[in-house]
Length: 226
Image (cartoon, rainbow, N blue to C red; front, top):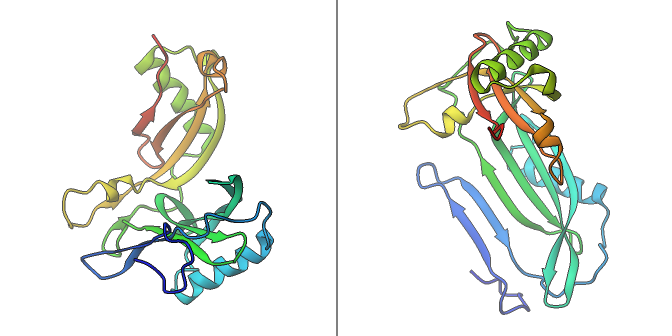
């Protein structure tokens, strides 16, 4: 749809509404292609605008800002500073979700909200695991090395673990086949690399998700190249 005061005949405003509950889940304002090269507002001012927008929607509580960056856009006049990009990850019982999040873009010239996306699949009817892990961080790293050796034949001496983070493995809620409640596992998200991954340009990392209570490997994204 077009705004009445829109000077740009090519820019559109798009809105997506959830058919089940009528909630807005996506919004994008594509105006302002012809813009100055430098931002007119600071990232701190943009963050205040973003926070106020979420507060007006009663969505600021229960989320944690994990990304705040000035992005760029390709315009007919060349590369220009685009919107400030914010990502707010959903937090349940003090633990971040893997997938549930809100993404918000604030125009760096006008301060206008130009994009809003909400990914919210964990429902109030879903069962969350105990937020306190049964398997501690050092023990889960040992389990990862054993799993990689047993599953892929990888020498544990090749593996360097780069990060270990406790999160809700809410992909199970996103992939549910029906509206029936699901049990959302608490999981350790481990990023690691081996000699093959480190030799690539740029270097890459693999990841694996381990249930923080049972020790089961829930998901792995790793290709040892053998």
